[in-house]
Structures are given as structure tokens and as C-alpha cells.
Length: 276
Image (cartoon, rainbow, N blue to C red; front, side, top):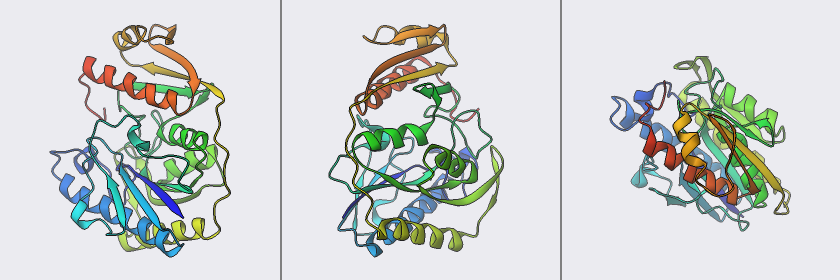
């Protein structure tokens, strides 16, 4: 059984502030250790369930957050950037299931460190007119590849978002949002045990095989900057819904890959702090 783990950082046990998750932050190095140990708990759960291959993709920010020398020795690590598929780099139909560790809720929600891919710059996103963030977009792309998402860890807002998107996914809340930069934290050992058990349980019954999909979907993104929206109109197939909203239609994962180009254009044009 081949298992893919996408690891973000904002939903990791104990982390609540930009200083915990951004390079140069006063607690970032501690945050890296916390992230690595949450992932290790997921790897242990996958191995308990019989995984023969576990691939971990470091999917946060610079994508060099996980500590390779502290990562479980059974896991292969995908590290660094650029990655054409970003949070899903290396995922394909040969994997039996995907696990999301440390994920967070979308922009505009009152979740810990909530945002959608670019923090302040992306105000809203929709997939086929349904509000979406990193959770829904990665889930939809994995499903299009034929890989079921079976488990997610994060705060309670992220768990609620995944449950709304796909109630069959097992969710573990490792903290409970009091505000965007404050939370009631689960004890660290308890959170890690819950992650390990949830991954093992969700994989013990082999996930049902999925058929890859080639359905056309439409992605719309509302940016804070009208300049970003105007510049993106130079990409074939991108159209304007209003002065700050662009959209494009296509199949997944191609549309997910194109969205990565959109964010790189936006990064080049703006200099927003990640959490505003």
C-alpha cells in the first residue's frame, strides 16, 4: 500500500502565530520540530496499517521546513521549491490514499492562521462556484487523480471545512481556535497519539479505489490587488469576472498546476505579509 502525506504547518500541534511558522520567526525552529513530529505520528500510523511506501511532501511556505534527519526513516521526503504541483508534488494514481497533516481553514474563516495559499492577497476562491481553500482544492485534485483523501489533522475550523467538503474523511483537531492567532491546544502527546491512531484506522480498511476524473471545472479567485487580476488576463484562457476576480476552466490537475503560475505572478507583483 502506497501512502502520500501532504504536510502543511499552520495546523500543526501547538502552533498559533506567524512567528511559529515563518522562517526568521522567533519560534520557527521549534515549529519545525513540532511539524516533523506530527508527520512522524502519521507515518507510524501508515506503517501500522501496512503501508509499504510512505512519501511526505513538505507543502508549507519555502517547503524546507521538515527536519530530514529527524523524519521517520521509513518516509521519503519531497523538499524544496519550485514544485509544479506545489502541495501535491509527486502525487499520482499509483498511491492508494492521501493524508493531510497540519492543514488550515480557508481565507475569511476564524481559524488558526487561516488563509488560502497566499495569506492576505487571496480574498476568496471558488471551485465550480463552491467556496474553496487549500483543503477543498487539494482534495478535489487528489480525487481527480484517483487518490482518496482519508485523514486530515489541523484546528477545529480546518476539520469542519474538510467535513463539509467530504464527510468521509477522518479528522483530528489538535487545537481549537479562539481567534486567528490564538487557540486552546490539545496536549502534545495526546494530539500525536490521535494522529497516529486516526491514520492507522482510516487505512486499516483499504481505501476504496477511485477512478481518475477528467471533468471540466471552473476556478475563480478574487485578489486583493486589481493589478494581479489584470496581469493574469495575459494568460490564455483566463477571463475577468470583475476588476479583482479572474477565472479559468479546465481539468484537474492541469488547473491546479495553472493556479500555481497565478500565485507566482501574484508574488512577483505584491509584497504582502503572509498573515495580515
